[in-house]
Length: 393
Image 1 (cartoon, rainbow, N blue to C red):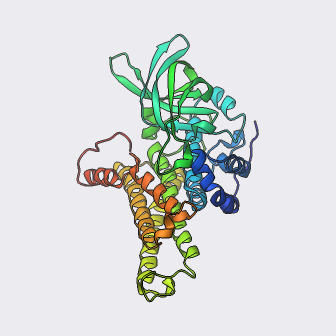
Image 2 (image 1 turned 90 degrees about the vertical axis):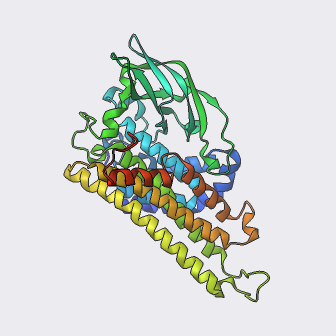
Image 3 (image 1 turned 45 degrees about the vertical axis):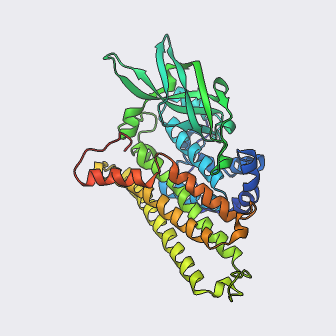
């Protein structure tokens, strides 16, 4: 066990910025391999950034939400698939931090451990002596090909004949992999499907999901740690939303980097940068990038403030976290679409970053928990006095 002191935000951001050129250079290779390139994987692990949501007593940093958000956004400026995969690993590490010490000591024996996870309960956990037999399939299992563990949602039967959602922690070696990740967006994330067939899960590697989502989970191991003093969904929403924010910044970076010397074909503009239309496009995209940042950083700061003070979350505040997630995704997509549309036919070439950035942002907007329409409807229902139509708040 290796207790460490939390690294300052500035140092973690410096490491993320330092990774940027390597991530950009390897982005196309990760797409082609449909998982992170080995060089990217090793650099990410060596940076220590995957320790941000690992308990300090096991060598982690227990970084606050604002730090995690800014670091992930910076990684996304380098490569969306890398940032998305890192986001999933960080969320899953946070989740494993809620398990008993017997589990945490095993999993976090390596503080740079990679843990993937799925929140959709598409498996059944049936009680047996000493634990559970788990059967089911989880799709979109980001990063699992390069992970040691999977913390996935399932349901278990209750004495009253109902079913309770739970999280089960399973070594990747116990799962079958279906190589079905053939997509146009987030291609480098390796989000394949995994299958459990009569996998035995010991009792201490199952965690009821209800208290985790509700923010009522007991953390007897580290009762003073603010990192776990929040409901799961605002944390998860902000973590994944940071990737959309960083990709919006990446779209602006890519467009402005490529702009000098370009002309607008079939017009009198020998310099695209001299065209008033271009000025409006850059300004419009910048507005949307800044708006995306407002929404994601607002929720990050609220998580940290409430974690420090112990103030409870209201239903409206939880719904607003989902609203902010939808808003950052929508504004990021608008910014990327605007700049991609101004990038000309040559931007369709695979070595031009804007086309990949646009595809990655579209993929995020189609994610079930990130879709703007779903999140806006949810917040609107709550604001209008209706009951939410989901437990994922």
